Image (cartoon, rainbow, N blue to C red; front, side):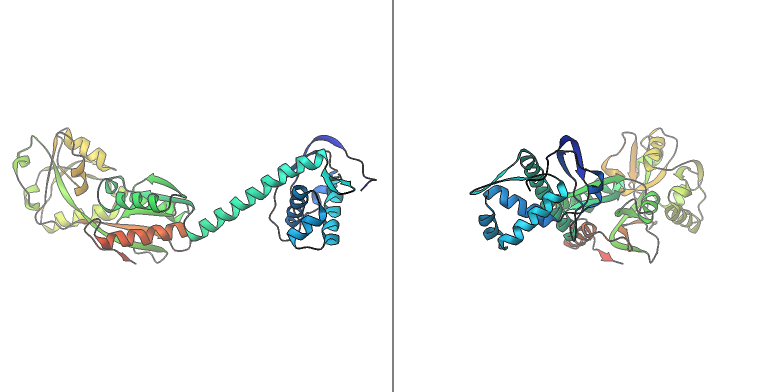
Length: 345
């Protein structure tokens, strides 16, 4: 290597490695001809280089690597030729790193450590114990019962999974799941779609929210017939089509026509209007866990409208972490974490 002149200058990067190896950037304090960027070096050459640098001897390195010394020397000659620099100063007994070699050793150690981390992360993601899980949820369902308990246990059992939670309506979650923006979602009343996987998790009943100063507030329960001509606040159908249709069908089935005075897209807005004394409304029974001060909740004795909670995902989008979540959710539901069983559909 005596005929090679070391060239010093600005930092440059090698973007490619030869053979079966992933692309790994390496920086050196040397000026490299741009034609070298199209060349490839093998990761095994870097492994060999580190062994020689640490032992400062080709013979000892070849023994630890279990490779013939002439073959090891040839690999280092190829590496130095590709870099255009001397990495080692050949001595009568062993070798010593050149200044450029010392910088190269520091960088290759970082590459080796980064590769080890990448392998561990990839294996963890493939096993469902790492990676990122984008999960949607219905806010009201997360206050009590299975959903919050599942999330707490999942984070405890799979701490390496980055859990990205998004509170969204059921229609918004469905659109995000179908569009690939969510890996899964806890939502109500999922459609019968063969492209969607579903884990049924039980249901929540609809109850009646009434202003605390209204005559109904003193009751322990109501019947649908009691709502004839009463001021009601409801959902816009687009916000929850199936629920709106089920509530309308229940009222019509009882021959009841309440006076609808307002429509909103969220239960939070509905409860704000009820709290203001503007009317009554059907809401999720879980709302009882955060009652506004001016609202009372009553069961509707003869109405069976329910919100069916499910964990939903797209079958065409694999996610090992999501599979672990589904397994854990199903196990917890069967243990009775929310008083309901679970069934994968």
